[in-house]
Amino acid sequence: MNVLFDTNVIIDLWDSSEDFESSFQAVDIALHRGFGACITTPMAPSIVYLLSARKIMSKREAHAAFGKIMDMFELLDVTATDCRLAHEKGKGDFEDDLIAWAAYRHGVDFIVTRNKRDFAKSPVPALAPQEFADIYRPHDLEYETIDWPET
Image (cartoon, rainbow, N blue to C red; front, side, top):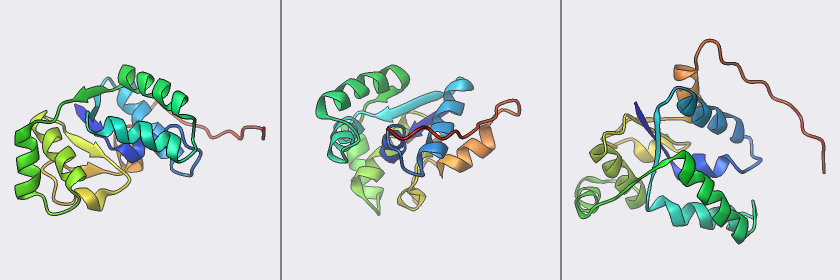
């Protein structure tokens, strides 16, 4: 199975928002089960930019974090055909339409995103991180939340 993780889910992995837990679990379960975890190449600059612009980390740290992302996720290319399909068939946000059509061409089974409505007309079905985790979590895998001391 191949799963594309949307930019917002990748950002959640480094953020301390309430979305961290479900996004972390979705990615962890995909990797634990040996699913193909991927992102598209046009997501790369957005990820690096958002990690620093949202003050999650410095620009240097964001650049280093993207190196780790490339180790964890396959980067899927986007072609001129994907652009044309996104333009002709897409009805929403062009960037999301482009991601969806590239995912379709690459045989992605699901897009995991916090913004499912942005992918409502996608040729690839979208799941929220918690939905994905609930469906694909192995029965013997449990997560526990711990509180970190304040720094």
